[in-house]
Structures are given as C-alpha cells and as structure tokens.
Amino acid sequence: MIPIAGQSPRLIDMRTRSPRPTLHASTDSPIGSGMKTFERFKLTATAMCLCIGIGLSGCSASNNPLLGHVSAEVGGHEVVVTNCYRMFVPDVQPSDGGQRFKPCKEADVTIKGDMVFVNGESYGHLSSGDRVLVEDGRAKIEPR
Image 1 (cartoon, rainbow, N blue to C red):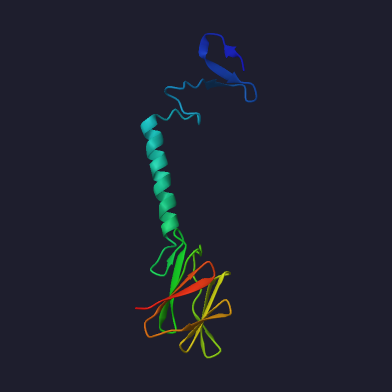
Image 2: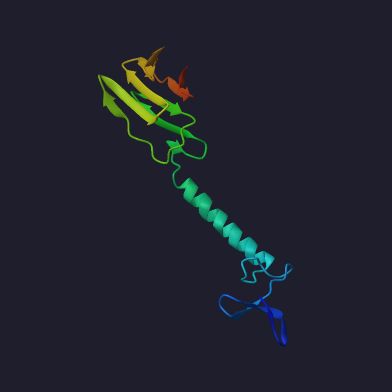
C-alpha cells in the first residue's frame, strides 16, 4: 500500500485500488467499522445474551444440558442421570414387563416391578417413592 498525494492519513489497497482509512488503535476497531468501546460492548453483550438464550432453550424440568442432568419418571420412580449432555431426552419405553430409560450411551436404566437395573447390572429393590441417581454408569438408590 502506498499513500496518495495530499491524503497522508489514508492508504490505498493495491488489490482494489481504492483508498482505505488507516486504523487508529484508540478509536477504530480492527474490524474496520470504527466502533467505539461502548458500541463493541453492546454488540458483545447482545451476542452473549443470544448464545445463553439458545443454550437455555434445551433446558426443561427434565433436562438441563448445561449441567448435564436428565431425569424421567420410570416405573413410578424418579430417575436422574448426571453427566448426560443431551438437548433432547428420549421417552421412557416399555421393556419386558417393565420400563426402560436410556438417555445416554453410558446409562441404560430398566425398572421391572421393584427391581432396578442399570447397564444390565441389578442394583436391588426399590421402595415406593425411591429415587434412582445414576452417575458415571453406576446407580445409587435414594429413599424418600
């Protein structure tokens, strides 16, 4: 780029042969739009709010992809699975005389009568109203 005679603060872009203003660190943005600090702040805040809104749109009472928690009512018991980052949780399915909930690859919960199975392994009997917490493929029965 070379300066044009009589226009020292402007430069010429050799690819397009058009004058282009120089950027001053104190007032101009590297984007070249001349945004001031407050304008950049507003743009950044708006973008962050938009991203948070999109991220929270996957949250519901049974699903929180930001924290990695999903839950469902399976066979009359609340089942909560952690470390499961899914935007959409599959429904509980009927399974051989019981109900099956498989929200993630690492958590396959089946309740048959009063027995709970996680990933094919039995975790014992459930009492009325017990809650099942599945963390890292292992279950913990929490009495109510």
